Length: 429
Image (tube, rainbow, N blue to C red; front, side, top):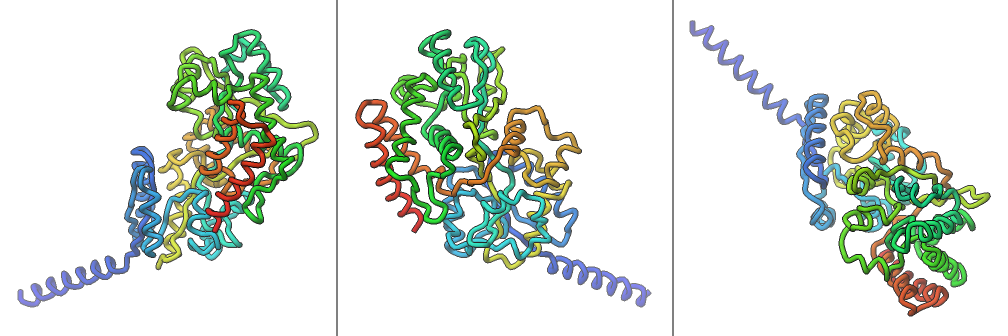
């Protein structure tokens, strides 16, 4: 009896030691992201699946809404306490990693991350001085979407060249009235349209990829602003003065958008559902062709990673962190758990996983825009400063000066070059 009791005790001690050893052998990772409740739930589900596959790795999720997330992450990175894996924005690279050393270089885990699953040009955009600072989760592109009903009433086909827009503007005005326009745009939309036109016609980007400063001469910048003036003159979209008359608020919630007075958008493909959903029935939207100048070999498409997964430069577990990123972006189990919570997967393996599972609606407006963007010729990629908020504020000011008769394209060109480069020099230091 005594021997049996002793054996039982020893067995329990041994089991307890094994459990303790297993627990101490577990690798602990921290992962941060922002988003809404649907993204939180999808990511937590994916992390559960990850732990099932890798029971020796435990991941602690640190998730918030958008407000305050950047400032929190900035504090963590400055204090070397950043998470092992982070959801990051592409335009944060100049903030955190101007020399490429702000994040862990994913080249060191290229096999584990299956970097070959991602388009080369996308990886190029997330690479700083030879170091891969993040893997693009998805990509978003500016393409044209149109209100089918408004265009049918105007009796014109969707533009295939930039000159076609001017004809469409005149047709909308003549057939539907002064309050109807083929497009509605904001400053950053105009900037992106003009950039695309300039690249197609002249093969030159507005921001230098070497200096990160405005790369146009005063003459070239004058042409850039003249494009806007000509579009307004031809009733392609409302001027800033006219647009202000509709009041402040989100564009998709404005009455002229809802009732079809505004006939289309130059919009990120990932953002189009909230616009389409706000149209009064039976109106609907569809993707239009991407306008090209005669003989153009580069579309000038503005496409960028909508977000990335980066690994912290101070991580003590780079191999485990790489396994986690790979699981979320390439592994069918992780990809299916996340679904479309972060957009259409850019990874070939991830995209195929959603197609096979039937979770991807290939007739949806976002996917149609994504698919078109992949087929457009693109050699000149945007820089991380192309869509900079401060630069866009300056551009909008010059648009307003033009619309209110306070400037000319030549004067606005000089002002924008001077003030824009001052901003870019400051943020690029």
